[in-house]
Length: 243
Image (cartoon, rainbow, N blue to C red):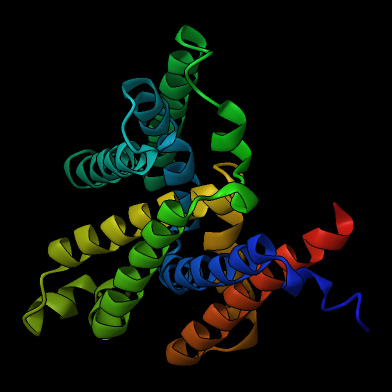
């Protein structure tokens, strides 16, 4: 029995577990809307599109979260622009943005290989986050969850039917920008926990699993958040014994 509670005796493990749960819950909340709209792959595109931002931030000596957020915002804005102004289908747009940004990121890393820790970008390192990083993750997750709790009904209406949303006075374009901003910020937060390659799991799996368990959206959000927080916590806890 004592072996099971052993991880809680170490500060870095406790920090990793609760931060993982918080980030997992935030990504899972967003996951419900991505599943509703059929935009699951957008999470994957954003997670890879922030790589050039992180690489650039490392090279310039600025916080990598700033570079990642800017790159994610540019990628999300580019996807929205191409979706509204061109005849390209959404899957083609996602593939175009994903490959372009990720390729640019790898090119930047190849130019300055000693300046960028590519393993941290790709795989994350939750056990090595600093107190400043922890505060940053808490702020990102806290602000994102607060806005989502306040606006989830408006987002739900917008994602179900944009025409109806306009008819009742909502502004779908503004709400979409807000959603993608939150998604970009949460992707930056998840980058430190699981890395760019596995962010897709945090923004797709909880919503997809909840979708199989219920057909009511409010309940889907609740189940998705619970799954995201619990699996992230258990994953961090299990890593103590498995690694």
